[in-house]
Length: 271
Image 1: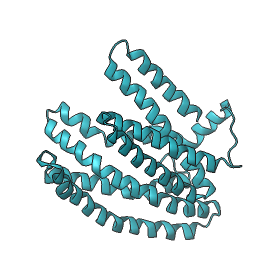
Image 2: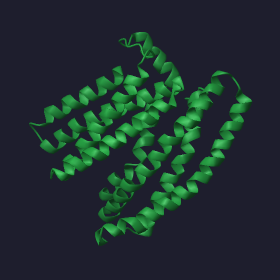
Image 3: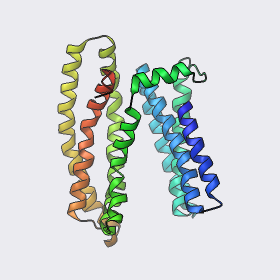
Image 4: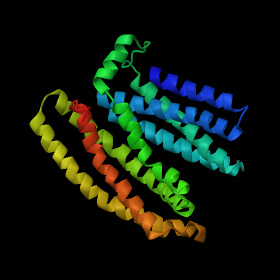
């Protein structure tokens, strides 16, 4: 939490300082600070709750966040708010609702708040090493086409990729966030109890299920891109190449579900 507050406070201050130079850049930085902070709090609380093996709390938080987002979208849309206000404000407030639900339920006798110390930082560096950098690089991959394609003069391809990603990313994230607690809670318990034979069988079974789960996800990705999007109008029609590429990329993320969590639980952070 100390790291989260520090990084996003610096981002917020940079945004405020940019108002005297460029309002667009300033608003991007300010909104990034708010969105990243709320998202980071949710990830932090999710990790704590998974370690407590209280996965039902995650379901409560996700339902609360989803309902709040839907209601806010409808209210702001009926109020004729600008499109970017409808999307950003509803997302921010719904994320806040989800975070508060997780915090109040997870903190009930389970969380002790105190400032970070120098020993905490040393322990953190020992345990995670360069993993934050690896996470940053992995998360940047999804954004590379949106940055590189326009730089290469492929603005149409960049727009198609952004459109496909906008619809496919929620599909994969929802499935990932639903399955992750089911895997991680049981797998972590087996590792703590040093039941490695059971853990090997459990992990292999999940890897097979992830491969099978990828088949309908890929089909859903192509169906959304090629069938549902054109219903919004001819300008939403996308090509097979963008749809197929998006389906392959987002389906491949399913293999990261058991593998990345397994490496962390076994202490293979360097790998």
